[in-house]
Image (cartoon, rainbow, N blue to C red; front, side, top):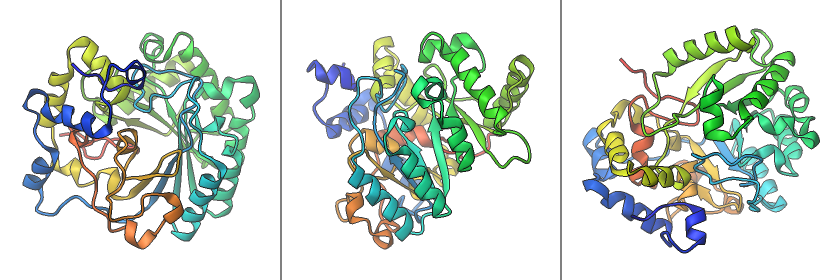
Length: 351
């Protein structure tokens, strides 16, 4: 059975193109077509409803190698957004009047232009989100990051698999939980997550396994209670994400023989209420090389925006891109299953 991971591709054991990846996903276990499922839920094709978030993936370099990372990031990755592409992103942010800049990676703080990106976007009055893995702030050469983020009022969305050590270290590596706690304590000391500070600290988690995340509201109550009780740590919101069947997580599913069952679970859990609010409708995703995508997951599958629309940030045209159709695939069931899943967490309330 083919496996969709960069490491296996390098050994010549996997599929040769993103189109083939999608084809294999579509063929497994009689998996339904997302387009047909969506058409039954709504007569209107899924399309953009504007651009309120410009999400830029500044590179795949990361100080961690997480077992479920859909970006396939790690310390050995060399992809890094060139300076001219960074500047093109910042021009698009300004020219397009886009209110939010969402910076991701890899570990975005490792990019040499990170400070420039934050400073420029902040000076434009934009809401800036840093998707932080927490442990990067403990590296000796990056101890400046927490205070820098606080000074520029950057919203932090920090990934943490669980509020207990065993589950977190199982997904992210030995010692990551304690390092993450140390980072969270420092952020709290700066005011992050504390009422009235205006410094927003969100935590994001995805299941360590082939199942949907729990109800976000109930999980948030548990996380807030346990992190404060056990460690004195506070935060604003918990965002729950569904594991997408691509890259390392698909490799994990294949290794355990769980691929077909997981894909079927996603399709059977399709929620039209979640589908109405999927992030691709109001987000534009920019890859490290400047190519444009409807979302981060399409980016990882090398599925660009439609061929009739600008496909590189240098050719940014807000008016045209705001009206684009969305490139769909079987992985889209991941965002529309259950309560839904987006970069902002769940999309619909569970009864």
